[in-house]
Image (tube, rainbow, N blue to C red; front, top):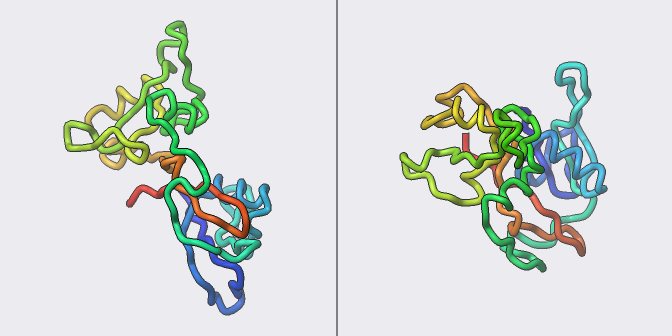
Length: 175
């Protein structure tokens, strides 16, 4: 999974000097560009697509990470995990279903660090998974199973303020 660096306003791509705020995924970077939260300042080829490798915020960061910045906290449930992940498997990317008629794609929730190894049922340790991928991963980490995550699980209540509005960001899972 490609990593995109996010810099505060004032980043100089020629000297590569600026305040690195965090890293994110290419998918989330495109969302930040679409919402005009950030502009691409470095690009590269990824397969046959041009993707950003560095973004600069369009407004200076005016606060630090805060929990529930201006929002109510999001109630935790397995259904809420599926909603956060847009009802897509975090391993293969296919749509998961609530219908037993689509058995292989039946929606399950997978512990990234298995609960048998101390993994908790938390926003950052759970991901939507189709039954097929969940069974294939079994009681292993994604690395052990050779099944990299296509998403970065995050707590929807974590946010930061950019200018006058709140932007949600994924919490990156340590590699």
